[in-house]
Image (cartoon, rainbow, N blue to C red):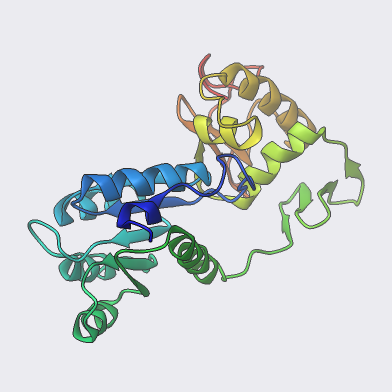
Amino acid sequence: MDTPNARFRLNVPAGQAPRLVISRLLVVDDEPQIRKTLEVNLRARRYDVDLASTGEEALELAARHHPDVVILDLGLPGIDGIEVVRGLRGWSQVPIVILSVRDREADKVAALDAGADDYVTKPFGMDELLARIRAAIRRSSITDEAPSVATDDFVVDLAAHRVSRTDGRDVSLTPTEWLLVEVLVRNRDRLVTQRQLLQQVWGPAYERETNYLRSYMATIRRKLEPNPSQPRYFRTEPGVGVRFVPGGGPAPKPESPSGAEDPSSP
């Protein structure tokens, strides 16, 4: 018979099924073992993870990082999980999955009425929780990702893995250039950090090789930006990451000829 801890074992090899749409999860639980187990399993599936042990910390992290899903225990020190749900619902529609030892119908109803989206009881199976998280992400993003994203100067066809100019001429990208463009386009209008880009494109072992990003982003801008030294679409936030802005708009201050605003930026 399985012990309760056996249900928390990592059961999918790290690095399997790479994720291109980056999702940030906030895990809120006062049990260190649960937090650590969830962090290991979620990071193995290429999620970004924030951890909180109190309701107050959860609300602060949610406001600062805007997670894509919140995994929330009800029995927290300080303000409890129901109050955290109500606090989040005051300003956010982020999916909330309750993960609690409380299995009474009244507790489930109270959490769902407060604004939670799903409820999983402890002890839990990791595969089931991961499936609930994936479903929550699908529902929240069902604001349907367009198969193609158009700018004033080029069109990115995510389904066909093709970039073309507005006159129909194809733009030739290498496989690595395409992966960078795809990650940024799928996360359009959101800042993607240097670390996220490196790990999504080159693999989980890459964290500090920002010279890769500088080189490839400079080439991508030369191929796609009308003025590579003043990029409208692929915007660097110095020392942090890159944001793809499909609407373009006024170009920011000029960047260096390499396409980076400072030596540490892509």
